[in-house]
Image 1 (cartoon, rainbow, N blue to C red):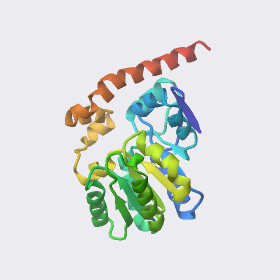
Image 2: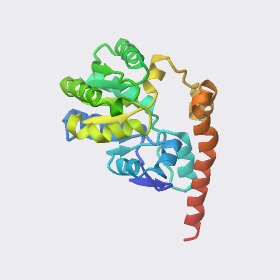
Image 3: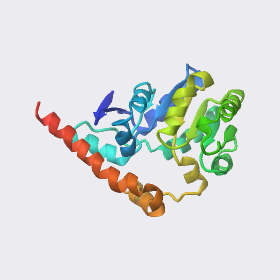
Length: 251
């Protein structure tokens, strides 16, 4: 079942159900699919990007990464079954992959982030099979040789799950353009999760994550990069949700 938040369809699965569905699909080696992890910023980008909208429509799963989406769903009287945070999902899937023999590839992140995250995860889970990492250079998406190298590395490694940390919507657009050719059962865009796991970017305390203040913590840590996203974006997201509520009340 899906619910509608400002024209974006969000799956109503719990965190554990999402993990179960992804792992089952990867284990069975079914046809390639991808997962999107919408937050308030994604919702805003989707309002003005038709290609991004099409990518979302074709996704295997669309899971709520941001607490504001949970608030919006509750306000619209169509509650979700909890948050599916991208970094938590990344770590949990790696943990389960270690027990199930699933192979994983890490693409993207800042220089060194994927390698550091891989070492940390390998130390936590000795049976974890990371079959490759790759950090493409800035502007790689217009470099045909680099694009071919990325695809060759991933194809040769043949992972069950591909995690892509390129930031939205770049990561989703790259996945959409390549997932069928790569033939990886599951691809997931996870933003800065490599950096968070590697300790290169500090993550908010648990109480801030649970109370929906993780965005505020990230704004304090990286104000130059994130001020526009949160200071401008959050009020706009609230306004769009209010408009949806008003439109619903007319019927």
